[in-house]
Length: 421
Ligand code: MLT
Image (cartoon, rainbow, N blue to C red; front, side, top):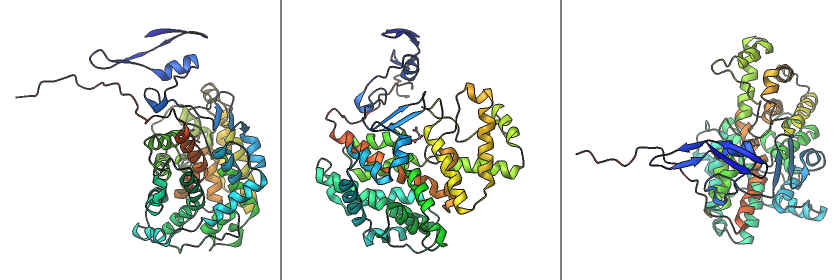
């Protein structure tokens, strides 16, 4: 262990031994103890970065986009308005917003060759695999995007992604159902257009329902950015090589894919269904979680940065009630989720460990009620997160101090060895 004196006091932190005298500081322990972060462009040592997009105070449960609280943003804005805020740093004027929306509307169509690209993929493909492949393929249609320092190309790639990702996502959904793809209806707003592309062949209440539309818009807003999470830092890492926006964001989509990141709400829904099917009580399930029974986890609880309520989770919970009421759906899974929250938060075990519901806890129940299959949940997260990824890619692209990312390695393998004769 080593001792560090710093302006706020002293801290003891472990030194991790490598081979041949090499050693490394356990920076995460140091950061936890001192609150200090080693700023390290290019993720050379610490994966630290600086950014002006989103602020999180995990202890207080605060999240702000460009300085505006998530509560205000969710109450007063729309997905595209927040996208502008994240990408350009300020709230748009009404004229800027309507020009932005109009521009996006004009780019919703996919090239017919890209439309046919979906034919080559098996209908059993996970929609996230389809999404990342199709976004990667956008580079082949828009080669100008490879000029990553050209402001015009950056702008048009931004518009194309915002316009086309929802269409690609809906096609990935339709493909998995074996249903015909629909063309975007540009007389509709962003969210209604997306709902129609997904459910255009379904009952009227699933098409353009103002409650659903508002709730989905809000859910997308809540997912728009979350500073240096796994997918955003992947976008930045890939982008730091001067890969274009499509390639970088396709990489981000793949990082989001896993159950520990964007796939978490799928896991929550599975846990809720398992509790319902097993017939055990919520209290019994919570006991098994506390006893750390093999494979038994309270999914959707706890977060790497929030040691308090995830502020997004509170807002999502409100939307869950609104959407299920509007659709007249009575889902026992929502009741189980609420009971789990109540029982867990009344229990010292969870309170002492500061485990609170996170953004994934209620979203699955809402998406299910809206009619999305479970495999589309992470795709919805990706549409939500897109403006954040774009904002980070652009921020990094214009920051002169950005270097190509290259995490430093502490070698712990075999020392130099003689080749066996
Ligand atoms: C997110 O919104 O990206 C997740 O909460 C994960 C994270 O921030 O680490």
